[in-house]
Amino acid sequence: MRFQVNRDVFSEAVSFVVKLLPQRNPQPILAGVLIEASDQGLTLSAFDYEASARTTIEATVDEPGTILVHGRLLSDIASRLPNAPIQIAVEEDGGIAVTCGSARFTLASMPVEEYPSIPEVAGATGVVPAEDFGTAIAQVAFAASRDDVTPVLTGVQLEVAGQNLSLVATDRYRVSLRDVPWDGAESEQTALVPARTLTEVGKTFAHAGNIEIAFSGAGDREIIAFTSGNKTVTSLLIKGNFPPVRRLFPEQTDHYAVVNTADLIEAVRRVALVLDRSAPLRFTFSSDSVTMDASGSEQARASESVDAHLNGGDDVTLGLNPQYLLEALGAVKSEFTRVTFTSSDNANKLSPVLITSQISVDQAGLDSFKYLLQPNLLLR
Image 1 (cartoon, rainbow, N blue to C red):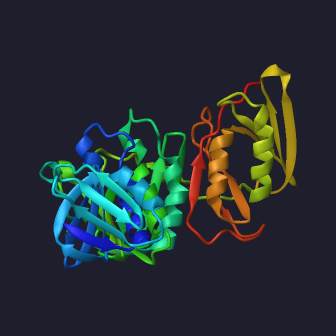
Image 2: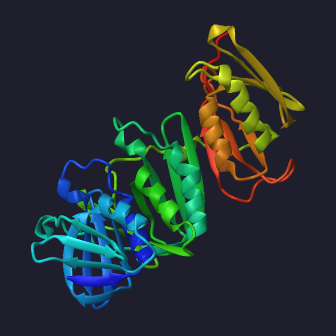
């Protein structure tokens, strides 16, 4: 095999396909990138049985063929080569020669015949706006659990209903939800996608125009595919039933406070400095302000107030995990934030707060982002 390719195009392609590979793979063969050269150009693929990435780029192919080479090493090399065309060829001894200007590398060839087949997806498909989808992923995926003990909570649930695609994630202490327009098959579809994989999809395709999403497979090999332009990412779905968290969101939202998002973020960051790890931050919402109080070890204390507008009810005092709150405020994407105080039929259980976007003090946000956060018990 022998071909010549633009350095920047090749480097970006290799970087794309290796992003989803784990840093340490128990099977060395899965650390490889499969490169197929043909008259149509180059196809680069990576697969670790959980997720795959594939892209096709233009190249001048003198001799068609297929090679398998260590992906991260090739990516590191390609990103540091001089600004000149790259020539890659298989030598007589089986080594892979990479030449660019005066730089030359020889890499070991991995056995192509031992590499697994990249999954193909053919099923119900639809299209979502890439920018909206990327923003929605960023607003939802952080709320997924990082604890593998409960795998269904480590994913983001995608739900198609009519002309709407919903993204939902929870780790039991909070729930994040966002809707985006769906143009495609209106039959109901669900897919529980690993949050890590979906986050990479969001970063990669955020500025791609549109993303085609395909649901496929059955049994133990249900997969989903995301395609935009010359790039495709597939992911094995998480098996299990996602908890019915939609019912937790309240219908009535009359008792709420509106706060400047940036001001609240900065105040929470400052006051939380004295807190012990995982300790809640005390918030008191009154008619014209929200006051934060914290006390930690070493007799350290902190307090700060921020302007707020309370509507529809009495003053409220509650404890919130500051990190969970900061992640929600970072996802709001609006100048103001609405913090709604929900009610519960159980008088012995704290009711969650609902966080949504707010364009101004009087006007609610235009997006569908919703975030429920369970308060913490405050010590007297």
